[in-house]
Amino acid sequence: MLCPPTNYPAHCRYTLDTIASRIPGIDGFDVDDASGAYAVCRPCQRTLATTDPRLTRRLGYIVDSPRQAASTPVYWRQTRWVYFDGNPTIRAAAKAEAGLLSAG
Ligand SMILES: [Zn+2]
Image 1 (cartoon, rainbow, N blue to C red):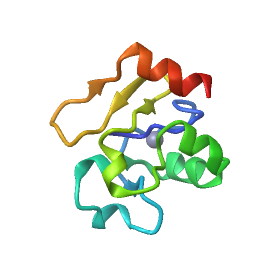
Image 2: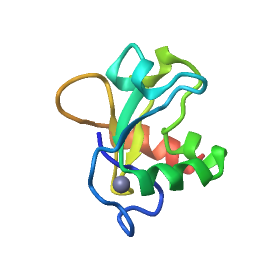
Image 3: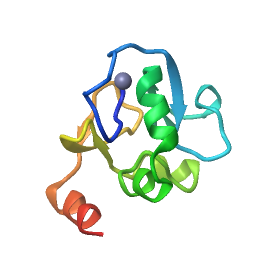
């Protein structure tokens, strides 16, 4: 998964500069499952770091625990809700699931 920030793609370099974690307190390189992290360029990483944590949580970039990562949809590149469930491809979230999240 690459660079999902809230103002994508205005400054995105489309590069894999680092791995960001979705789990507070755990480095992206240390997560146990692919659902808990995503690839990100430095400009997007800075954007995410300065975005209101309530928004990043609502958009799925932050989850409360590792076991929630695979089942929490992410609003990917501000275009669609997907799951980072550890599979080689991104799985789209059902419209009902995405609707519940975007309405909250
Ligand atoms: Zn980026």
